[in-house]
Image 1 (cartoon, rainbow, N blue to C red):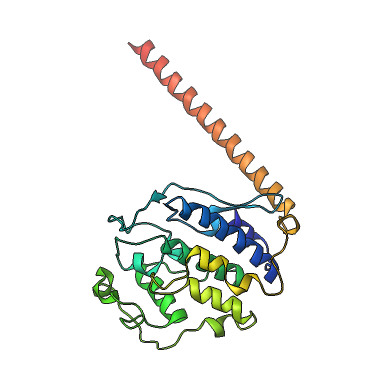
Image 2 (tube, rainbow, N blue to C red):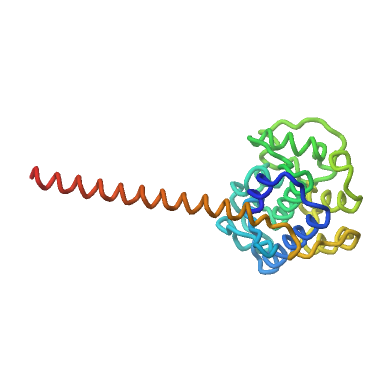
Length: 256
């Protein structure tokens, strides 16, 4: 998966490689949303990269269909680092916009080669978000004060966002797409089609051809060997456990 590759490879992706990965991710999301499906758990470890450079969205265990107006849904979704602020604050009427926030977190992670918002608790996650985007308010996010989490979490006071200072070497359009995905108000957040039509994808450098993406076959082989050993040890453990159970049964029969 993409998360493992990022952990094991020290060389960051180039701008054109990031653009290629984001283009594939958003096209996959467009397909999901056009079929009324919210993934609800987009993260690096749920993105698979084939040996030919094709990105695939995986693990639809938390996915569900949606309708407008939406019915209440559980807020206990999305891995914390990729969780949209409306979900973090307890909104149960969220929309496919939560997937776009996750896509923004993934984009930021690709850009800086490490997790963008790595909180360990809800409060710490909110602190990371505010440090990057500033403090949310009714002005930029109408209805924000009515969310349950606003009564439970503390909000630091920061009047500015830091996207440009955190990513100074990236183009204005790159920063703009990231900001559009990481928008507090889900109604103002970019939709997947708006994201795909963003000038970011038209400017130079263009998206790398997937077949030219680095796929690190040596790491793939290493991971495959590790998984093979894990399965072998698990099979041996299972056989030993079965043999022990059989021996116990035989001993009980002898005593009887």
